[in-house]
Each structure stands twice: as structure tokens, then as C-alpha cells.
Image 1: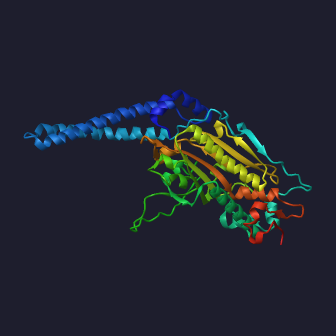
Image 2: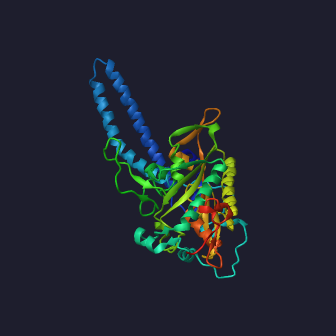
Image 3: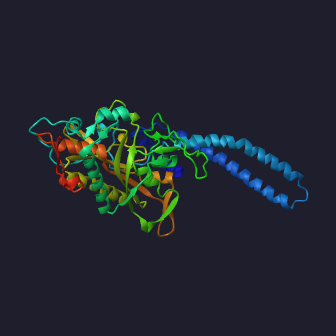
Length: 438
């Protein structure tokens, strides 16, 4: 979320960004509503000040009749204006949450993922002496994946990972966590059941409130209870990534400049309704409702150049992990039309999936500047004591389903077995270096 004063100053620039990001928003309407909001607020504040003055005068007045009459008049005016102000304020808030963030000067202009730009590629695509199988076939043949029973028990997009598949999946999760720790990221096991503000604050709601028709978030229907046993009125949701939990950790707090940048990583189960992806990737593990992920987050000073360097640091760690795992990949810079509302700059990493014969997103790194921090009210005090909103960045370290797909499809052998990358073998039971059929 941006500051309204900043929006007025950058009106023409933001109009261009609104068009480039394909956002449905009239900036003229927002600014007109804001003028009305400010006018009404000033009237209320003026009347409230007069009301306070009359109350003070009442304490020492000998003849209070005139003060009482005027007091009633002021009160009636406030009662009349307040509902109109609340209505205008609601309009203002609804429009404000749709104002996009600025975008970096080097972000490609485009309408969809077709306009994303490949800026780097690593590794040679594997050449097989046989027709490579996809992860569905490999998983079934090795008895490490069961999609049929997953659908029976968990419904559409449900799955079971089994036997050595579990060891492999947990191996690269542990590998990712240890990699992050070695790079100076403080590890956390985070809440996966969170309050509404954490998801709104991090930008996982399209509007100001949860909308099940467009937000790919699961709301928990069962009401929670407070510590005194009474029913809680707070809504609870399942996170789709550890990012909201990590970002909300310091909500409504003021940090010190010397603490920054703060590097955090979170391990969590993730839940996504995938309602916007109906009909896409309907088979296999590529797009599922629940999975595990290690997420990295950085809280930084309000310095765009420094945040660029930190984003490159995060992407660099993702590249390093892909290379150590031996997974061919490419790096994309995401265009304006394929970026989220609050994103200033975004990169994706896609690994090659030979069984599916395509690239698949395995990491996504975003720089939000202070867009999320304003919503979550996370600030820091600089050397002069000035309070500033923190810049927030995030990136996928490794996510379980797509990394699993990439590994077993790239490391499949002619005899049906799957080799285990060397960096993962120490995490496997007995240090095994391959998975074979039983």
C-alpha cells in the first residue's frame, strides 16, 4: 500500500504503472474520493474540537443554557456527518488497496507470462538413451507416489508420497534449511494458521477483505476459542507459504537500523486452493493443494539500491542450490503484466522437467519495497531517530512438489531407477545413492 500523498505526487507515473500492470483502477476516482474524505474529516475534527471547548467552558460557566444549546447543535452535526464520512472512508480504503506499487526501471513491460524475459540459463538439458518418463510414471513404478489413493482420501489434487520418496523429499527440505542457515538466515517453524491481517498485510488478498471467489486461500470454518473459553470472532486462514507468517512477525513494531538487514527463513506446510488455476496441470504434483516449502525473507533499510543487491543475493542462493542439485534451470525477469500488485521487481527460476518436456517454476523472488510494511506497520528508526517503513523481500528456497518432480525426472535411469544427487545422499537413510523398484 502506498501513501496517499505519494500517490498524488506520482499521479502520472502511477497511471502508467496501472496500465502496464493491467489493474482495474481509476486514479482520478481515488483522488476525488480522497478529497471528499479529507473535507469530511476536517469538518468532524473541527466540530469535535468545538465540542471539547464547550465541555471545558461548561465547567466554569454560571449560565450554561446557551452552551447546552450549542453543544446539542454540534453533537447533531457530528451525528449527521459521521455516517457519510464512514461511507466515503470505506470507498477510499477499497480503492487504495488496488493501487499498485512502483516498478523498477529495468522491469520488462508486458501483458502476460509470454512477455517475461529470460536473462540467464545454466546447465545442459539431459540427453537420454531412452524415452524419459514423467514423474507420475516414475513415482508409480518405484512405489514412491500414489495419486489415485491421494485423490480418494484427499480429493482433487490429493497425493501420497511414499517409501524412499519421503526420504528424498525430506532430504532436500533439510538441505534447503541448512543452506539458508549457512548463508546467515535465521530458521523458523512458523504458524500455518494465521489471522486475517497477516494475509492482507502481505498482499495475499486481492482486496481489503478475503474473497473466496478470487483469493487462493483456505479459510478455516471452525471458530477458535479465546483463552477464557469464549468464542473468538477473529477469522483464521491457512497460509500458502511461510512468507505472511515471517513478515507479520514484527508487525506493529519499530526495529533499529543496526538490526537490518534481517535474514529469515521459514519451513512450513503450505495450502493453496488454486481456484485461479482451474483446468491447468490437472495431473501429477506440479499444482497441488498442499505441500512443504522453505521460504526466505529479508527485512531491509529503505534503500532501493540495497534492496536490489539483497534480491540478487536471494536469487543467487536459489541458483546455487539448483546447481548443487544438478538441475538445469533458467532465470526469468517477470514483466509488469505478470507481477503482483505490490511487487517492485520480480524474478523466477524455472527448472527443466524432461518428463513433462517443459520448464517449471521452482523459485520466485520478489521485492516489494515498503508496500507490505505499510500494511503490516513494520518500521525502523534510523540513526537520526526518524521512523521509516522497512523494505521487504521474499524468495522460495525450495518447494517440495516441483523440486521432487525435477529431481526424479532429471535423474531417472534406463533401468527405471532414480539416482540421488550427491549433496542429498547424506540425508538419505543409510546414505543410499539411488531409488530402485522393489
